[in-house]
Structures are given as structure tokens and as C-alpha cells.
Image (cartoon, helix red, strand yellow):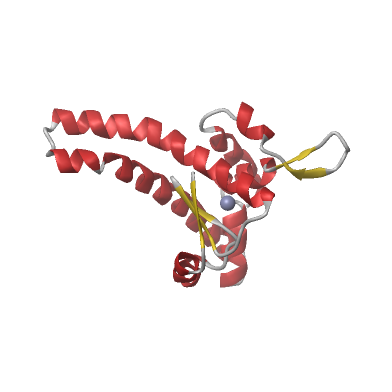
Length: 164
Ligand SMILES: [Zn+2]
């Protein structure tokens, strides 16, 4: 993953998605300042979620493109379309969460935060970016990434519905 550290892109996105310490748009991650280790691991989990979608959607779209004889320049956009589709799914999950929290009487800002935190992709990323180290302290650890199963965020839908 390629990290882009600097204020330009984050400050363009803050009015749209709210302030963040880092955001991943695979294969890039953007942060205004050098991120903490737990943020790095968190964004790598998001990168793996994106990669799962890319590895499933891109071959499907590619096969459709070959079947429909799409022009070469359109075929070059297939991986971008797969990543965009993943981003739309992430956004849809956050929007559904926000709507549910709004319907339960939360303010717009509160519902936005709760919708974000109850997105199953975020539940996976927040729940697995830290680990117990041999000294007994819980802190950032990339260990989870070594054993992570593809599309495991889907299993967190259970926690998501339980939360909301
Ligand atoms: Zn996240």
C-alpha cells in the first residue's frame, strides 16, 4: 500500500466524510500526519477488505467485458470499477447505520459516528488492529493480518445488527 502523508487530500475529504486520522482508497492510504501504528494496522485491514473485493469482482467484470467485447481502455478500468464497487458497499453500510441511528433519535452527527462505528468493515478493523504482546500490554499489532480470512468482515454483520 502507498501512504500519502500531507494535508491536501485529507482537507479536501474532511467536509465530505468528517475528520479522520487516515483513510484508505486501495492501493493508497491518506493521512494528514504520520499515523500511529494502530492506525497503520487498521488501514491495512481495510486494504485487505478492498483486495478481497478486487480479487472477486475484477475477474467477474473482466469476464463480462471479454464476453461483451468491451474496448481495451474500458477493460483497463475494470480494477478501478471493482475498488469503486467496494467503496460503494462500505458507504452503503455506513449510510444504513446512520439512518437506523437517526430513526432511533440520535442527532445527525451522533448517528454519523455510530453508523461509522457499526459498519462491519470498521468493526473488523477496530477489533483486530491491537493485540496482547508478550509483556501483557495491548497495543498495535499486525499479527491478525497473517491469519485473516478473506471476506471475514461479513461475519461482523452479526455484531453490527446486534449493535444497532
Ligand atoms: Zn476504518
